[in-house]
Length: 447
Ligand code: PFF
Ligand code: NA
Image (cartoon, rainbow, N blue to C red; front, side, top):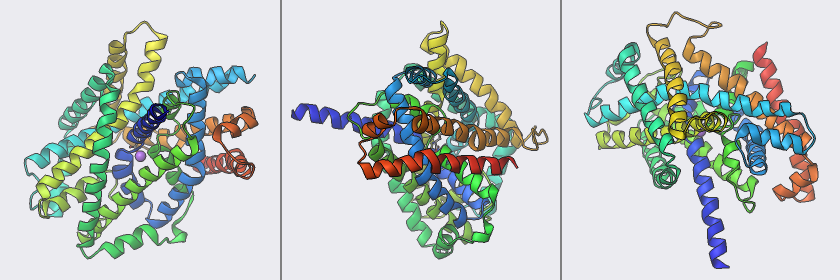
């Protein structure tokens, strides 16, 4: 008896760790902070929180439910469930677009992972010690302008991802997530405390939490929704795939709540650490993708124990990026393994090299190809926009619509363990609120 409950607890724990490892990554620290800065602060933050709660949570639950019932890769899980419940096989497109989205995201995610590696090694050599904001800015723009250096760091990052995925070392990773994630949180708290000493903490808090509602427009809402999907790893087959390893005993809703709270807490802490530094140094919050790479080295370069803390921070950031990147490569590898004759190692190499090539196109948007635009966007921004604003929301929408409208209602409510009253709330949220939210934002984005 005690053995059984222990085993259940540890599998649930392992699952939470894997899902959290995928969710917590560059999206929480790099992307969240620069999106907040770009989109004018608190209005974005509050809409983002609403998106996470009203849209993110039900879609996360829906993706896990599909995965757990399907027990296969995202495409085949969707296909099987659609057939079993007498629905069109076209629902499998949800899986197809998820796998494709993950592939595209990894190409630019790896470029940023490369930046994180560069800053890790820069911290080792004390590159940022005593630097002012101009010096730090110059290091960053020097990196961006140098296509060879960017390629090198991107290659190093992708090589790590390929190596880990090829060996299939998920066990070791779970253990690492368990120790490194708390370390990341502690370092974020140290940074927030440092932010309090800059004298600009109040300004930063107002920027993040006291909204100027007039700043809200369709763009901001679309960006907030895109960030909610990105940060929770939704709409890309990953949570579908992870759901397929789930035991029957795991409560989907409470687990989703845990993962979402962790992910959101880390993002908010990142903002509370970064914006005081931005204001204290007269930097612009709308700096764009470089925001954390100019603010944090500045803080570390000027605080006690800064070299050591900076090294620890960028190492942890790189690690968080790696655990997410691994989950991004997995769907493509799985697909190649099942649909072709390739071995796991060969499939990983093929997928990894393809991602690597696309990543090089993405990194050249910062230098040699900065004039090359697709629909007015450089390759990097195009990939980011296409995935986070279009593919992820549409794929997530497919998943929630399928669960809410196409699966047997009573069995879903039973599986989620809902009382009659809760079932009603679930029904309204999953059938109406979340889908309409996605559609409205999406259509807004188109026009
Ligand atoms: N959720 C990750 C982050 O916030 O960094 C990024 C990510 C990982 C997105 C895995 C999508 C994904 F499937
Ligand atoms: Na995240």
